[in-house]
Image 1 (cartoon, rainbow, N blue to C red):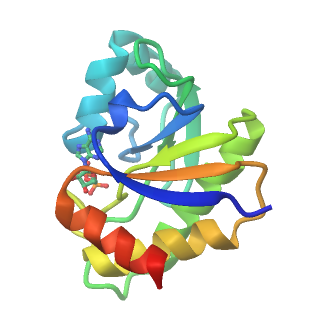
Image 2: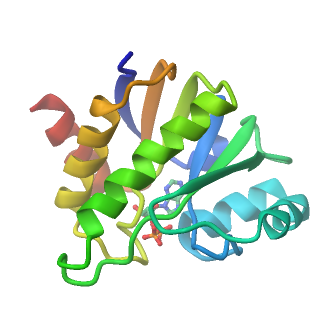
Length: 166
Ligand code: ADP
């Protein structure tokens, strides 16, 4: 099935969906941006859980409990760093979304919130990243019923609205 898609503006750490996705780095370490906010909200148990997993390749995703956050799980998805676009970035970004939904199915999450993976510190151009995100989720065959794109700023929300309405 294809999930219902929606875009909202907000802070993903406040989401009460079954799972939130972290824009993680491949060493699954506490970072900046949305990753920093998720680790802050979850508390030190998340550092331990990520250390126990070890690492995650770009384009892949791994789940942990959410500890102090109001959601049930955190799916740590590693998007690509933007490097001009000829280093496989589009496929790797699509894979990060696709793998996140596969992991969501494994942990039986039916509602999942995504941040705009790779569009912050990793520098992926917003409009291109948004199209890839929406296309990857629409193409997924998943038991997830709701995908909520949680946009931190109005520019990101506008990009998602444009793509979702087209
Ligand atoms: P990346 O390293 O993958 O680019 P970032 O965390 O730097 O990850 O940025 C990804 C997106 O997450 C950006 O649009 C950024 O504005 C957004 N973001 C930052 N903090 C939050 C938050 N608390 N909730 C939702 N999105 C956030």
